[in-house]
Image (cartoon, rainbow, N blue to C red; front, side, top):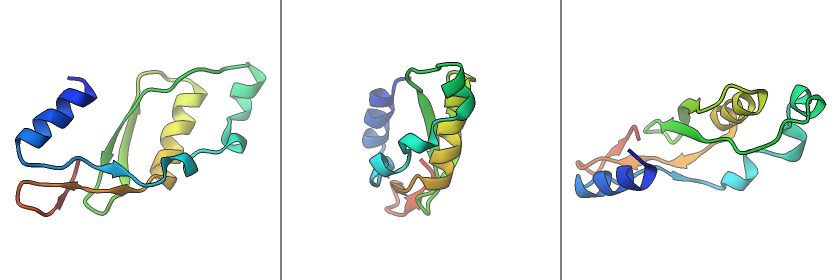
Length: 95
């Protein structure tokens, strides 16, 4: 199920999905993995993240397994902050 389909399903269930807080500050140029630089790796990283009720990334999965993928997930778990999902009961929830 795509991200927009998940958002629509969550909205239909009366839930609000997590919203990132300043995602442009999570990953910086100097975070580029040295081994990826040496082997001239570049591209896009598609990731899925699970956010705790406290707004922290507690799980991160990627489609690939390169140094870039691993670095992105590590940095999102370390630096990523979110407004948590809100369940149908109105309380913060995993999302």
